[in-house]
Length: 460
Image (cartoon, rainbow, N blue to C red; front, side):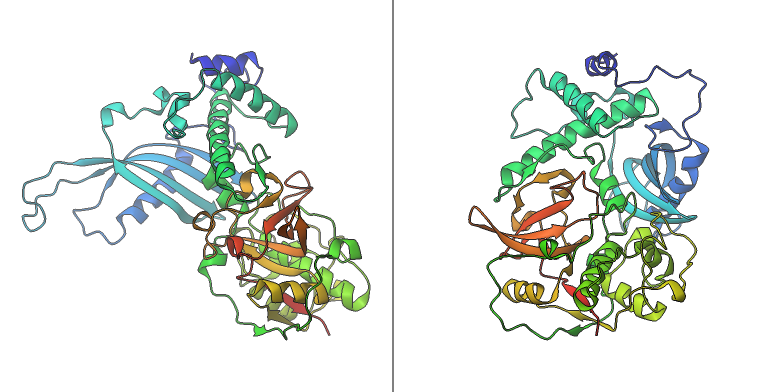
């Protein structure tokens, strides 16, 4: 047994070894396994996508397949490793000499929601089939080199201790010895990534262990983020009337009663719904004097333009609220974090909107509008947020491109800390993330696209 596995056993992080004949668990994240019937369908779909557009006789064949699966609501995320065999090339117009069969090692991410497959990631490269065996991978094979310096000799000992604290703090349980060892390797890799993000940040933010630290980057993006924000144009909205007043030096709608408690979207890419309900909650409070916690689940179930846990756009959500006739409260239409049959009742709707508007991309004008009119729905690039703990985040622009926004949130205020200007942002990952559920981002530099997709509902 590898030394780091022995450490896990000594620290009590691994369950007793399962009998050789035991079946993999039916739910949760599973470790790498040999091909099973459940993996065949997503593997065949990945192969179909790989071969799309290829002529007969040039299509690859599927070889060995291993994989993991993680459940999310009614969907399943499959992380597959597969060997593909491409046929030999004998066409003299393409190949100068006959080429023998080529074996590729591919990593695929396939999402299956309600029987519909979607390929999220494909990464293939040549492989020496004699050395392809995940069972022989070591702990160090998951860790990138950090400035080419060797890791400290006691790195695995310290990492096992930190991982044990993580498991205790966030009440993690793993289904097998293989799953626990895999998650520790992901965790260690993530700690190296967090250290790199920390070294490159120009603000006061601190990055490290969070409740997402045992997720791969692909898992985190697929489960918690919203790829539609950067890909789909959404519904056009009219520009908001500009506010000509000079914004006050600081402002915070939390102190003025316009913001509900931090919510938790769970394992569902529904940030777009939380961003919009947060905005409407603030608008209703400012116009009617009552702060109501509104239903995100109504939007997941009843907004037929957006894609529930697979993502959506605030502009579409505003339109859906108008079409439906309003929003019910959280108490009447509670959150489930998965797509259900729409059960909206117009009689129970407590809030309505009349229109929606697009706000200025100028951050000074955006601050002025916010201070006068209420919290604002925005979308940002979530770079580094998987490991964000506290402080003002200010990533380098190439690392946090404003054109790759993938997470919708709520702008509730702004100010300065130690002469560093910031935006105060309400997130929807619960109070056990960030600064009690809030994220602070540098203001005035267009950081992470904070000013690219600002909008608000209009209530007359």
